Length: 252
Image 1 (cartoon, rainbow, N blue to C red):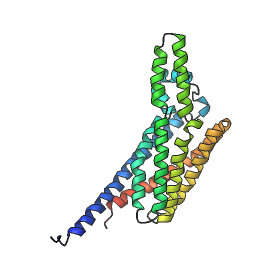
Image 2 (image 1 turned 45 degrees about the vertical axis):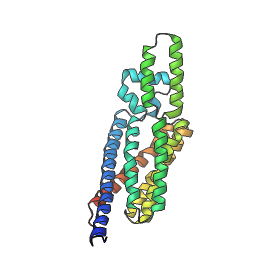
Image 3 (image 1 turned 90 degrees about the horizontal axis):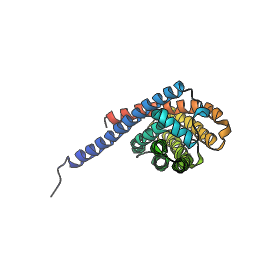
Image 4 (image 1 turned 180 degrees about the horizontal axis):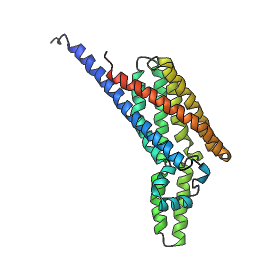
């Protein structure tokens, strides 16, 4: 039985529309991340952005959770937890946009990001520390408090911002963004300025992650690297989000 003449044309149009929907969905999730990042900057400005003032030990974090649980979650990167998840469809959309050009770079970037996102999500200590803080406050004996504090220290060592145990969860997503920006530079789907801005921001964020993890004595200096890096990455995201929206509306 022969197929209608317009069968393949309709099928191609349907497939192309699915890709456009992916671009749009990726742009929407990126937009939410952009808004969240701006909100993060505002919170950091209000709280002073002093890393030395952030509680370091488990018991100090327990106390902060009892005093202000929202600030406790924020200081343990709960906001980044959600934005990391939201960027998953965005990276897939960026990779899909390069499926006909520079796919190798963007596919590698997506894989690196996904691995890093998985490491970050599984190691994030915010919710476990919140739970432990409640148990610590309810503990009636010194022995119980010692055990809970020890469990808290283990969680801090594994997932707190700047801890070596959390390095992969911060480094790999930043590395993924750097490779993605390089793919944009080569692919021709996004403008070259978009690629250059992404590369510049990605490099600075990688330097920040390395400094804040392995040279803790200069954390405040590391913030000076993170500030321009974060602004460049934010600008990069705005640029590629606008392009994704346009790709989702484009006529082929």
